[in-house]
Image (cartoon, rainbow, N blue to C red; front, side, top):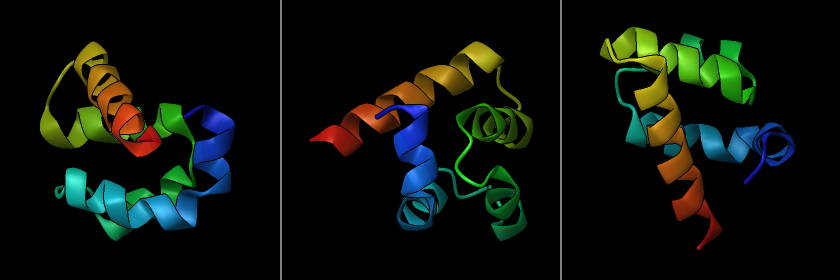
Length: 67
């Protein structure tokens, strides 16, 4: 799933992101608006992890969405 797909389907994916990263607030997800880089930053911020780890989690989440 690339950034364009995330942006285009964000309303559908928002609920799945909330399940995966429960510490993200509705306001966080509204700010993200499907932009992968901002989502990675919010995950990093809420979970106190490195940017690389947030990116890895996003990659894995995107991979599961393809199947």
